[in-house]
Every structure is written in structure tokens, then in C-alpha cells.
Length: 269
Ligand code: NAI
Ligand code: 15L
View: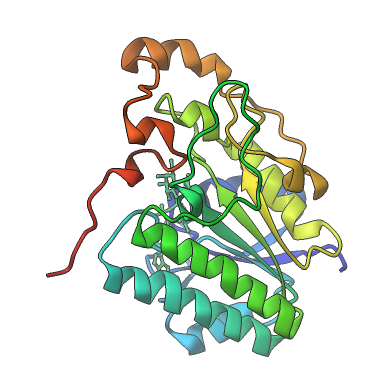
């Protein structure tokens, strides 16, 4: 696939979208922005919902690839997850297929596998083919997105890299995050690799920096050409002093998904 130049960035107004708006142009991309909320300082951004198919068609027309970050990013009542993350992602894939977009990079999440026990000392890192174990309706929607990506590859030849992002924020803010953190700069490196690697079909990768306390395996990410440069370890002393070591008796400390495994579902009724 020729190197993509024009990228549709969905979720451009969000936290990760804002970070990527500042970092990805350095890799030579021109970004077309899409979000249901206005994107501050970006009058040309498309303000529309993912379920607005006509707006999506305009948005995807002519782009070389999509970086799909839009969606509800935490647990929410099922109806809301259904509309934004499940129906919305379906509309994006179907519109991209119709418009001939060759590749999508999908923001999946550790919460698709959140009930996976974290490896204890000496145990192997969690492989990318670990069974899906969503910890929330939110995680379930990311699991759906990965399956949708597989379907659109197998049936239509639309390529996807599903990036199971750990925690991508400027700094880790919990002891758990020391194991799953992805620095914004490494996030941009990984998205760039996912946008440009040859012949990805549908590839699932874990999205983290090269953390000393890493819980999951980065082999498939590295195979795309991703070379993480950051490590959460410099934050460890302060976070452990403030919060204590992880408690082996607390499921939120011993599973990949952290507190999401303990949080009750949010029912709409
Ligand atoms: P965020 O909540 O800050 O941003 C999400 C953006 O999507 C918001 O600007 C929101 O307006 C937009 N959006 C939501 N529903 C929409 C819809 N129906 N139509 C159009 N736009 C819609 O989330 P953040 O942190 O920026 O995450 C971006 C993506 O990465 C999300 O899909 C999230 O699930 C995923 N992710 C993020 C992680 C992180 O550490 N930041 C970790 C794992 C996954
Ligand atoms: C996610 O999937 C969320 O979108 C993000 O806000 C964080 O909660 C992150 O996972 C995490 O697990 O730290």
C-alpha cells in the first residue's frame, strides 16, 4: 500500500485526538478531523455523529486511511455504547468500504480483555491471542470492533490494525498504569507504524510503551515497525509512595482492566 498521506481522524476533539493532532503532522500526514463535538480552533473539522452516514461519506471520501478514535471511552449504559461504539463503528466500516478506503486503524482497548489476570512475577507476558474477556459493555464494544475489522478484512479486503491501547495519557496516574501506559509520543509512533506497515490484513496489537513493568506482549506491534522509546518506570517511585504497591487481594489490581473489573454496570433504568 502506498504511504498514506491524508488521514481521517475521528474523535479529534477527545483527549487522544488532541494529542494526535499535535503529534501526527510531524510524520507528514494531513489530517481531516471528525467529532460529534466541535474541535477547538479547527473551523474545518466535521462536526457530526458517527451514525450520520452522509456526513461520514463526505468525511471518508478520498482519504488514504482512517484513524478511528471516536466513541464512548468509558463504561456507559448499553444503549449509549450500542449507538456510538457498535452502530457508529459499523457505519464507519461500511462507508469506508463503499468509498474504497484501504485501511482503518481502530482504537481498541485493554478492556476487550480486561478480565485477563495480570501476569505474576516470572509468568509470561499476555499474548495478543489471549481469549477476549471484556470487563464492561465498553470493553464488549471494543471486542465487537475487532470482530468487525476481521469480517471486513476477510470479506472485503479492508485492512485494519486494532490497537488495544493500554492507557495513553501524558503521564501514568496509577500503579496499574505503570504496566499498561503508552506515552503520547509512543502512541504516535505506533499509529504511524499501523498506518504504514505493508500487508497487515487484520492485525491486533497491544499499545504500550516499553515499560519495565509491562503486562502484555508487544511482538505484533514491533512486527509493524513500532519501536517504543518510553518507559513508565521514572514515575514508579512517586506513584507507589502515594498509592502503595498493587494489592494481590484486589481484583482491580490483579486484572488487566483495573477498576473496570470491579465497577458495577451502568443500567439505563
Ligand atoms: P475521549 O472520550 O477523550 O474522546 C472520544 C471522542 O469521541 C470525544 O471527543 C467524543 O466527542 C467523540 N465521540 C464519541 N461518540 C461519538 C460519536 N457517536 N460520533 C462522533 N464522535 C463521537 O477518549 P480518548 O481518551 O481520546 O480515547 C480515544 C479512543 O481511544 C476511544 O475510542 C477510546 O475508547 C480509545 N482508548 C483510549 C485509551 C486511552 O488511554 N486514552 C485507552 C484505550 C482505548
Ligand atoms: C480505556 O479504554 C479508556 O478509554 C481510558 O480512559 C482509560 O480508562 C484506559 O482504558 C485505562 O484502562 O487506563
